[in-house]
Length: 483
Ligand code: 6LW
View 1 (tube, helix red, strand yellow):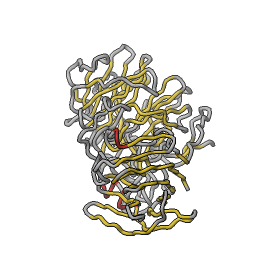
View 2 (tube, rainbow, N blue to C red):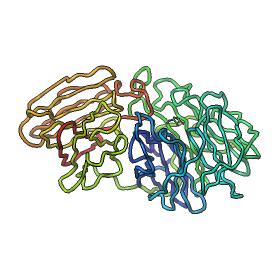
View 3 (cartoon, protein in one colour):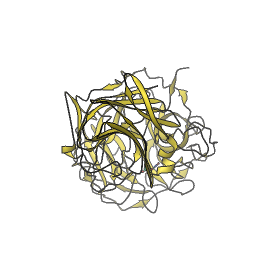
View 4 (spheres, rainbow, N blue to C red):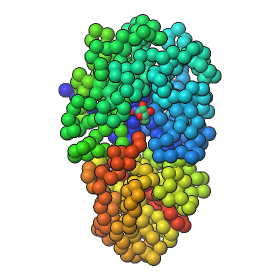
């Protein structure tokens, strides 16, 4: 039996939504305070994915003024209809909106606002041309029809079925499958009680008949040692061969009790079987690391290079909030960061670029040249980060910020010239240091637990970042090496 390995998108990539155009599948995920926003991935076999861009790659589409950590872009939905891709989402700074494009790699349109207060909006294009807008709202799952040219809501507001248990019904999607309308939603909260439920009706407005085996997806009854927890927030897609699949979010906790995770909520794939007009997700609602692969022809992408010389800033690299244009540039001599006066303790605005930690076991390193103060960090938010920093006087320091606690925990002297900084991660520990004459000098450690979502709060995951705190710094290269 051919299998695939979950997660299909490792590292912080929550709230996945999927659509298909011909033989091509596309996934989008939430991006919160990070810019550019809403990463978009492409696959031809549902198993191998590569990022083709960001849906929101201009400040005019993604204003993040005043954004806080885990604010910004919440759960997106992607749909393909009548030759156009649509992506609808919420920006906590401006509200609900959508953009469209004929090409998934962009450019995408300017935002079209939708005037209703909600998170987790979704679109459904019915065969008769009616377009439905369905979303979370304060009093349950709401639905309107929408004029897709203008964003105007064109019907009365209807409240639909709000799930099996009614706690945090969210992430609704409406589908028409086999002549019935299905309303699928997440409930129970995005933590350990997370689950996915479904109901069906003859009409898009209901009344909806709940599936007798709800929730159709959950790990809430599983023990702490299950390698996957919190599954839910799913979206369905039919493959060209008639098979059905769900993408969903889940976490891979660090083996420990109680459950903690630091890589963020990740994107998983599970097969969907239909029985008596109801979907069975995965192994009776359970998702595994190894699952039976789709029978689509395997279509892998070349592995991304481990080394980045910063000739341009690739899709992996993100800013916290809208970038300060004068704070960064790339060119033949690498990446230059220029301090802005903001630090790692500020939610946005520092001279900082970062990328997701996607593997538990990984080593990242960079060569930095500075007369100021600059370095390499691992960060989940402005209150939880570890860094190894070059400081004036040819010294390198390791600093740890955990909530109200801050300490410089180690210091060493370094010779003149560029210095190689390194962070090595396993599931439980980060080691921070520098490399001299090809030998790593480990200065200090920090536990991954203190950078976890359970400690920091919020909706994101850890990132490796490059930053400048004083003066200018040149980073010649960055290496991300899974171990
Ligand atoms: C998202 C909601 C959720 O909008 O978490 O797990 C919120 N689900 O649906 C932020 O990701």
